[in-house]
Figure (cartoon, rainbow, N blue to C red):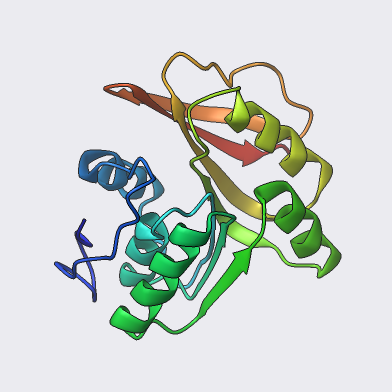
Length: 180
């Protein structure tokens, strides 16, 4: 797995064996949709290797917070932080729901929240509901949910509006914005 663009371009990342990494074409699509992220704060839930978050840092995000509860993945993320000499990184070794509650208690907010939970048990839907209960999305922030194409996240939400969806193989990206 390599970083595709920016200051870390072509740098290889450590990859734990137990994850389903975000494909290059999906990562490219995420950042094509987001556009310029220079100076924004980025939260990656279910970080895996941190590849999406490191791509965000490479493209100019000012701060990266990663959340992961798998020990092998946390180890890979720590190695990748050291490999890239990445500054502005925060790593939480917690389940996503607990991390969201902790971040809210610390009054943290993020311009972009990216989530890529395992493709089972409607986990993307569950974490979106958790995000609705805790105000960690900045006023003009976006949530990018990567999930199985068979899982629909388009049901009405009290706090978020679905603004875009795209499919890539067995993956669907759903982009949400906070309702005004």
